[in-house]
Image 1 (cartoon, one colour):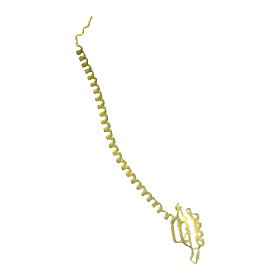
Image 2 (spheres, rainbow, N blue to C red; image 1 turned 180 degrees about the vertical axis):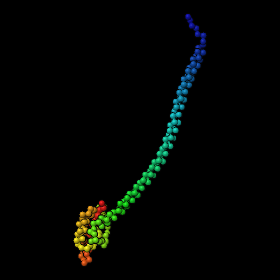
Image 3 (cartoon, rainbow, N blue to C red; image 1 turned 60 degrees about the vertical axis):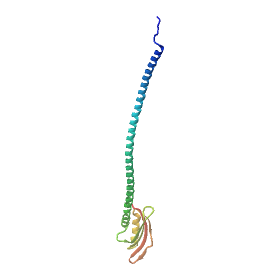
Image 4 (cartoon, rainbow, N blue to C red; image 1 turned 60 degrees about the horizontal axis):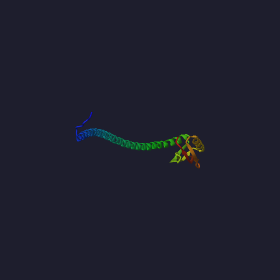
Length: 181
């Protein structure tokens, strides 16, 4: 059988072009939809990330405020601790002189020695250098006191000066170091 094509060639080409345009339009439409879909996804992700950035920036501002408050509190704490250190050192030193005098008086033989003057100075080792002018009822009282000083914890560097005797008793200088216990 013989086939005869009665449709003109231009018409077939026109139809082919129309089909190609439709296919191209469909492919273009699908591509456009894909591009729009990807663009929308990117847009919404960027909006979401922008909101997240804003949220994080707000949190950072809050944390910066908290950090400033913490820094201020730490500065106050340091100031209070330094004041506390000063108070503690004053309190610690404040009770040293009564301790020195208590130890000195406890070492004295009762009613046998009395002081005419007592000078104190802080020594480099943390103790107190005592310079004393004293009177006693006799030499035996001085010897007894020296023995007690040597036996008492905290006294060191005991140096007795020259003793002058008179009818009313003995007068003598003495220097020693006391380290509070």
